Length: 367
Image (cartoon, rainbow, N blue to C red; front, side, top):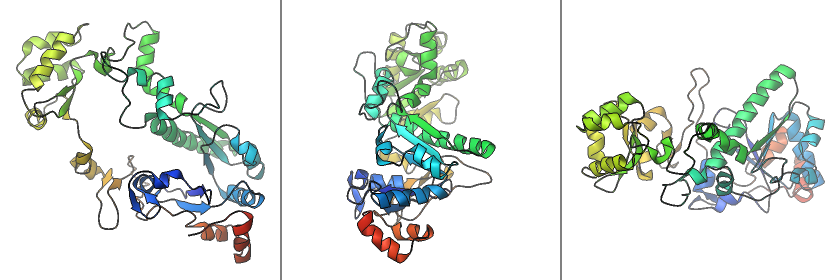
């Protein structure tokens, strides 16, 4: 949202700031690499909203805000007195986005959970891995990002559009469990309509087909073969001089074909296979390691990866490209707890005397 031009104010508890600040390698005082990546371009206000004075400041922010985004368990902010209903009372146009694991209601609503739990409940984890092995935790947090963050942005933007039409805001209820289900639209639709494939490694796009598979190479690196359409598969078979494979493209049982293709890929290194495929339409690409991402020429050309320098680490650019409203890539570091607190309070009309009073009344903190 900050990259799309929004002013984002992060409210943190003065004694218990965001725990991600200390998670993983530290790149600056009180700032981890993870926190830096997630919070560049934001402003920080360190204040205890569990106090009367802190709630007053919160509602002063609500009066001028478009969105409130929160990630507490259902009912927690009602206990604090800063829930959607109280926010709406001071600003009927406010959009209040709540991100939880299981949603605001239902039998699981108050369960604790993390990404692995949500993709486990939702069936995605059970489909990830080979037919012979156990479920494998994916390499990224799918429920957190695709089911939570992305769904929250979609919900926020659609609610803003609705408010432009109706003049009123609303509560947007985002559950990460709900949000991962659309990622399995094809798999669930096929299964619910009678497809016999229901286990990991047996579905067409996750292990059952030789043409859509991950293969190890001679150097223990991997390639991804995505020759799903007949023309791509035929092109691959021509590339490797295996015309007898063409007719087996979508045959039901492919374990032996997968083994044959796998044996072939072990005759060359990953980069040799990629060079051999060249620009031919066979959908054969390398499986990149993390140390290769920053130098990927396509990602650098698109500005999706921004190389680091003496002042900033390598970081991600905004993934969507707009023709008329270009996004920005913040260069300032992620804020320390309360870095912008005083200026934010001044913008709300608080005097220096009032701001200093909040240090005692609301635990207001500035570095």
